[in-house]
Image (cartoon, one colour):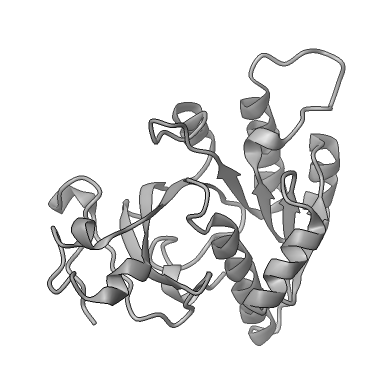
Amino acid sequence: WHFHPFNLIFGGGPIHGFVYSLSGYQGTGKTTLCLQLLESCYKNSVEQEDEKKMLYISNEQMVTELSTMCDKLGVENVYLVHVKGLKKILTLIEEYDFIVIDSLPGVIYDLGDEKIKNEMIECAMEITSAAKKLKKTIIFITHLTKSGMSVGSSKIGHVVDGVLKLHRGNVEYFNNYVDNAEEEHWESCNIIEVQKMRMNASGCAVAQFDNGQYHNHGFIISFTKLLNFPKNAFAKVVV
């Protein structure tokens, strides 16, 4: 898979058979990021003469809302569905190659009558097992608690191959690590923190998020191992 601004955090791009979780507060652009990622990966698959099918599953927003967002973003090759049941989701996974599920906490376990103690984790494990078996790429969107922790993060992190956290930057934050952070373009940047990435280093990426979309050939992306920088920091920008 290929999506120019975020290839580094995926270790060269999202991988077939890998499952990722993406968390963030409301309004940080999780849906936007995933729709643009799916569209870019579709176009790349066509260029490689190996056309793939992209699917965005929502149990929160209706298809009409997502369609309006796709029109604004220029996303034309992503299938949109509103589904909550795990059984239907597992069926859809068989038909598509790259799937985003928005959101994981909203998936309903309906594979049997028995009550499940930790429904979200069971759903994640079932979906991850299917992805591994069928060599599908999946992103779970998850919520953040008031304390800033991902819902079920401690357990979800053991299930998935990559854990990403999306949050807004600001001039005050960037000023600690980047020269000329007072420049106004930093106000339109978001930070993607990589808390776990199998077969790749953890770190952070910075991307321009302006006018409601990420810039596929944006002005900056930076990535580094966190071992060499303060917590939640990122490498100095190379323009």
